[in-house]
Image 1 (cartoon, one colour):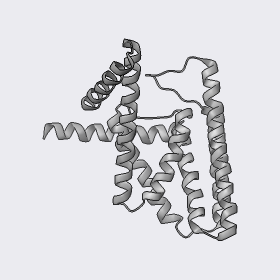
Image 2 (tube, rainbow, N blue to C red):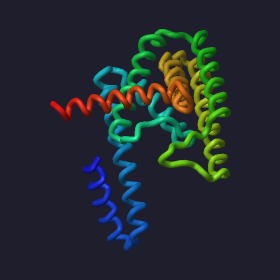
Image 3 (tube, rainbow, N blue to C red):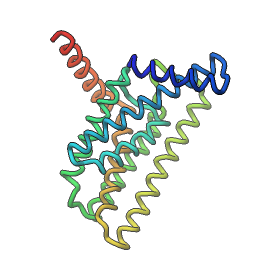
Length: 221
């Protein structure tokens, strides 16, 4: 974490010197650089694990789908960016492995109702809980909450349209990858919806606690 902060601060100082920014603007640039570095590291870690487990395609689709919705809906997460990156790699690749195991030979007859149930579930959870803030970054502005809520529904609707188009294209050329992609999109949205209330929060808490214990044990070795 300290290394990432140092790198982001160095980047912000260089950019600020070129643009002649004040202190506040420099801090904003540093924060943006830090978020970008953390996000890049998390995504690279997810990709590496996906390659090792031979589920790269599934992992990419699931993680991008979940991340797109998470940007506006919020949800459970670790207090540490490093642990959050590790949890992302574990969770998304676990979902990808499950997808590969249970849906690799699925057909349209089973995927259409399954995806319909997934989307209905996501819409219900968004209606009930979205957006979810955190104690570190509470959302106090009512109008801002409304905008996040609307954008969460927009993102989900965009993925619904994409899924419908993929199904139409499937009936044109019968490419099984298209069906597989629909399942990955559906499960990515479902996982993100789960992080908005107890099930996802509980899983996130368990993984975070486990990672903390592992790190503590390593320090004492």
